[in-house]
Image (cartoon, rainbow, N blue to C red):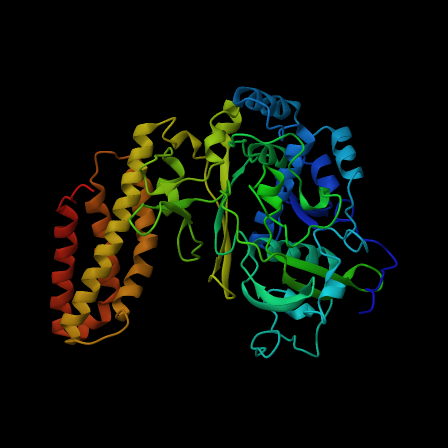
Length: 515
């Protein structure tokens, strides 16, 4: 296998611009070093692809912990909170600490020995490259048809290195499972790869008034029992490239490995002549070891109760591009409950200790990537909530419970709408056999959720207004709009829908049995 080309000009992830940022109405690109030196002047990240932004936030927050001393596992909770408050009060990251950190590690993307976040041994362990089209999301690769893209096997256009770095992060955190490029290690070949640690997930990140506040608010606290100082490393901090036979062996350390060291994919970028582009890639598995058991601080989890066959376990809250963020407010605002079935992101447990002005202004950035469990990417999305930490159960129990009640009633109304819409269709169309939901169901639900959101927010300020009745009215309006044409043409449809509307109100007025 021939050596990779060496570009005439190196590209540093620390010092070359590749990260999109926004300050007011002005957009710019910076490297990682400038990201920290100017964090107090930057409003927010502005990466065009939300999964890349979510991945970069985890990397930047791990670096934040390093340069501020918040990565010391021997600090008590009160000492850790006091240190974070003092770092926030300083108003910016210490330039000397920033330079010291970035000067002691290798950040060259095309370094022949330690390319940043890449595996240089792939040039000999893979007998062929994967191709640039398989690397770039949205491009057709292999035998796939090029329905909406000018790219194909013989038209593999290079990618700017700045863009390739953002895509690199997506593969490390959200990469596919299944069959990949074969890799031979110690005489054993395999092409089986497992999915990235964030695949199909939705992340919730604290969003401050500046990037400096965002990064400090996003540092997760140490919750383990014991971790020797210096035991934790990020991939670029390790003295030698990781061995795939020992990768992720043992408990996950905090915060570097927890946030940056769980990738299941190995990548190597092939540069163009001048280092400004990537012309080819190697993309394969990074480890064959089982996935470690760990909790990502920015993910919400659903708790599966313990049964005779299944131990109590956590399932990530999956991303759904059709699901509005406000439907998750119940999960985000209620304090942890050992008997509950939902667990808010662990980062929320540290936000109540922030200074009051920041806590009151803090919003939440939502980054989701709607994917299947293996290889299909459906859609990525992002949203920003209003300031909501004053609604948490710790600060306003009554408000938090009202929000939880309204979220539950909105979901219950949707389930009732689904049921009565199915029954109305069957009655009106005299349908006895069907294998898919009738068209009235999905169309009604599509109309219902925007109406439910308009009902939801006023209900929070009207604690005496019955939430079930309000959401039943929204569901009834959605069903009537969906069936308007059918009701005009068919008497049977009009009668069936009228009965369905009555059922919506009747069932909403029936108290649910306590769990």
